Image (cartoon, rainbow, N blue to C red; front, side, top):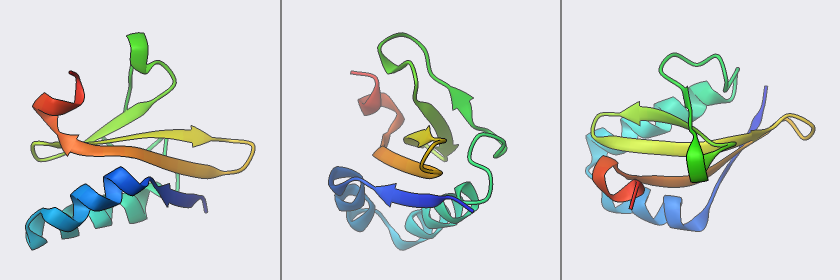
Length: 86
């Protein structure tokens, strides 16, 4: 089981969103602990985001990278879809 580390900016966004959406994202983060790269809906990112993965939670994207040596998932961004790619 992997460890999940949420960056400060992602945690700050998570505090501001409605409770239902917050619970959905927390559920996704819990499920990422088991096997982050085999989680349904996880996509590998390309270009300047190379090395990162994303998973969709409604209109919000959870962007993370997985360190296999430390068995840790680092969640760097939790943002609305349109804002993450700017």
